[in-house]
Image (cartoon, rainbow, N blue to C red; front, top):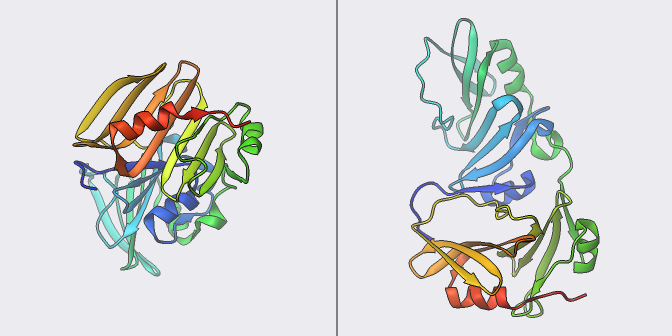
Length: 261
């Protein structure tokens, strides 16, 4: 799917970001409990937003992925086996650090500055995301009624495909219900009227329309829509279709929602 700009997709668990990136995520020890947002840029770069405005990135290759292009008075390079580390800062503090082992590149950015000794500890403490992160807030269930009990609200399901496709059922953070159909079509529902899609990339086209009692906003390219959000005033819904769907298919999906319990 060709789109303009860098697609940024937000995930609720590092394991899901790892699946999208197709490589093992390494993060510094202790960073797991400071994570506020997990995102993947262009299916290539892990982008973690941490407490206190800190950010951490990882990607294949050796390019600078920090996204920080400010000029600093102090720039140096050193070796912390097996990594070559470049730091940028001023007044004895480091604000941006990037390092690579020749296969992967990493970056750390702090708006407040830290001492180089702290950077050495960060680089030396890299470990598997499974070891560094807290338990995933994403819980899988076998049945919709179990997910409803966990989320605390009824989950309408699309009659047009619910019994015709394989499905995986989750509750994210105890608040958002997610059903994945055929391994790629992602449907979500939650209380409130926020955008719960977790996908914030820009698409060439947007279309707003009414489907029954629901206000719908579909984003896509030409005649195909990839991310759709809607609400009925009480609940928010989203549909992410990586291969795209037509407006007719969207209307059929939304119009077929029903409670099965």
